[in-house]
Length: 280
Length: 287
Image (cartoon, rainbow over all chains, first blue to last red; front, side):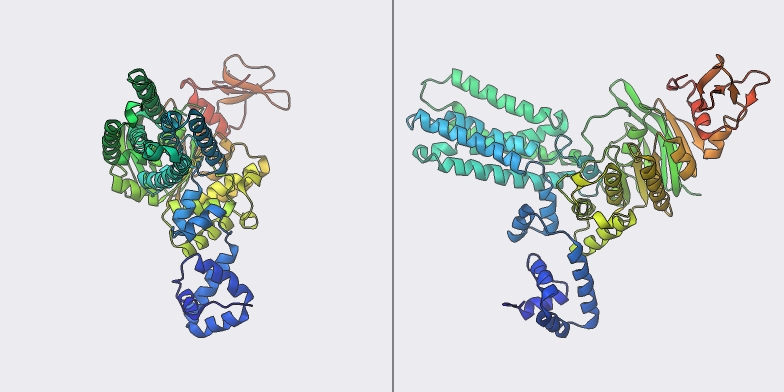
């Protein structure tokens, strides 16, 4: 062995207070290192030591977490929350790949149109990506364990928020990276952010009333309709669309705040099954 | 015996369809079977009792807790194990990871205690050897056992099983029956099924549903007794029978009101079930 577990960590391990990922590392190391097992034996009282061996026995049985879970745990996310996130359907390579592909295309289109004009296609599509991601992260459409999750004591709104924060972080992060690829536009390229928050909050707030499919569809459709109307009313062909002006950004911020408020009011309605019914 | 689960006047409509119509029941520890044709309202009743769907009218309690309030609903869910009709899985999870995921949903956040519980329930359904295998690589019977293990996490006092033996081969079904019988010791189990053999072999009590209503509530022996003197054999299909079919021996087995002098047969639970459904508009028997 070229290294040994620090004594403080071994003492914390014996007390059952060592947290992942140091806990996992110590588990693995102890199976192969007689020296550290000896130190552990000296550092712990017999009862705590027996509990430690029992825990080690259980850990050896448990599967290693996947790359996403391991990453989240290293970032400080509790291991049980990391597993809830690992079960989020849209945090999979296929969805992430689709988002990256859409962003690459829109960024390429913005470069082709030239820096003189607003990156309209990018600004129009970028807010829809987090809306779609959040809509597909919890509910009967894509979550195969939705029915089991609904009848669990974990409140549906809590699960929704855990996944929403994760999906939003990923989607907004990817959008942000795409924005960095458009340096010629300056802050104008960030005009997707407030509409993205407004659409996501509105889509979630409408879900208890319209259902998990219709709510984001209606919200996305309304966004497209607003853009078409703004395009028709645009005074100059190379000017920005109304939602991407300062006034439009203000409206988006108000809509985001209202949507978040309505969502909070309707939170208990996420605690019941929304998969539609039949008399089966 | 005082019921552990009791419901009065449960009603629920889906549009113009009356899925539950004034359903009242009281369940006691042991396995209670729920029989009924497709569309009878079995799954709706299970979803209501599992607190997934609220009833339009009526009330119920589970182990002394009323799910009418958010607090009561959570208390019920803490004591509930639910195996839905088509349990979904995250296919990339192993059996252990999936049950671990459900254990987290059931508020077992301490990693060591949770893993002990996951090992316990996987051992209970005899899946310890394949706990590290991905669910997409497991057989249908094994997946059902994984779902049952997930339902058993936390040692729930009320277990709701929606047609768990559908799609299983005879050997898997027998194995599953053993597991359900074990699960029914000391806890209240409500088992929805199309298999009258499941009820005959497992249940101390049986409910028959049709058109959203409870048509029968009694023991399997009492349901069978309903067909006493109403099952007979004939060389051709008796036109007066409510149901009749050719058996393997070539003679016809008829259920209904026998003609005088008919060759009466020993009734089965299925005969009693068919006669109970008669008039409910759902008897589907090929002659």
